[in-house]
View 1 (cartoon, helix red, strand yellow):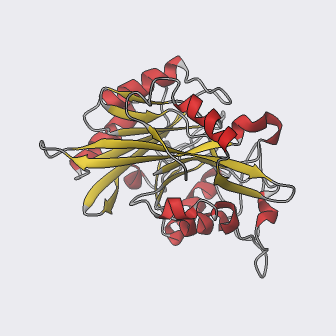
View 2 (tube, rainbow, N blue to C red):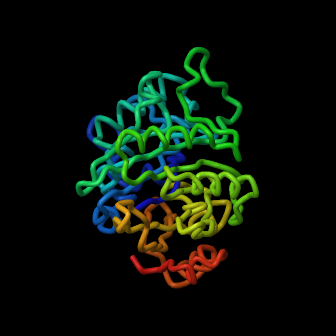
View 3 (cartoon, helix red, strand yellow):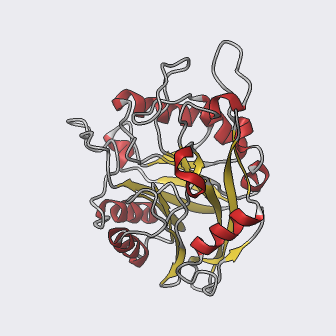
Length: 323
C-alpha cells in the first residue's frame, strides 16, 4: 500500500493533535481516520518529502523545510513500514538534516531509501521481509531545488536526470542481486499541480518498468493525483497526491488524494507480479484548526476516480474501492 507526499507546512497540522509535555506535537490525529486501512497492509509505503528538525526546533516550512520529528512517530503509529526520502527538499536542512532524518526514521522503526549517511549505505539495498517475501525499494528525485550535492558526498541523495533513470535501474539490479523478489521504485518528479504526467515522466516510468528488476512504480511531487496505468503488464501510479500538506490556495486538487494498494502473487515461473491493483480515494480535510487524511466523500471519490482512469486503468483491471 502506498500514499502521497508528506509535508508539514507549519500551519493547521500543528494544532490537530495535543501538544506534548515539554514541547512538540502529536500528529497521530492527522492519520487516525485512515490508519485502519494503512495498518491492514502487509507493507505500507510513504514518501517523506522533508527533513526533520532537532526536537524543539527551530522549525521551518515552505520553501525550505525542517519539520517536527514527531511526524515520524505518527507515521509509524499509522502503520507505515517504509518511506522513500529522495525529493527536491532532501537537502533543505543540509547534511545534518539529512542524517538527522534517517536517524529519526531508524528510531521510529521505519525503513528508508533515497538518501544516505555514508557511501556504503548508498549502495546497500533496502530490503524488507514481508510475509516471507523479500521486497526491495529504490528511489530517485529529479531535483534538489538548486542545492548542490555536498562535495565528497555526492552519494547523499539518489538524483536522476529524468528521463534517464540509470541510477535507479542500477539500484534495482543491486536489490534483485541481493535477493529481492519484488522491487518497488519511487520516482519524485516532474511538474507540480498538473494531473497529466509530463513526457519525460512517462519516458522515465517506461524505462523503469521495462527493466526485469522493477515490478512497480510509485510517483510523487505533483501534489495532485495523476493517473494509474498498466504498462507491459506492470503498474505505475504516476502521482499519488498529498498525504499531508496544506496547499490551501490551490483548491480541492491538492486535497484530493489516493491510497494505492497492490497485491503481488507468485506465478508458475517463480516470479511475483501484481494480480490486483486497487485505489482508495481519500482527501486532506483542512478544518479551521486541523488537518486530517480522511475517507473521500462521493464528489471527491468521483473526481479522483476520473483522474486515475484517464489512461484506461479501470479497463486494465484497476478497482476503485471505498476506504
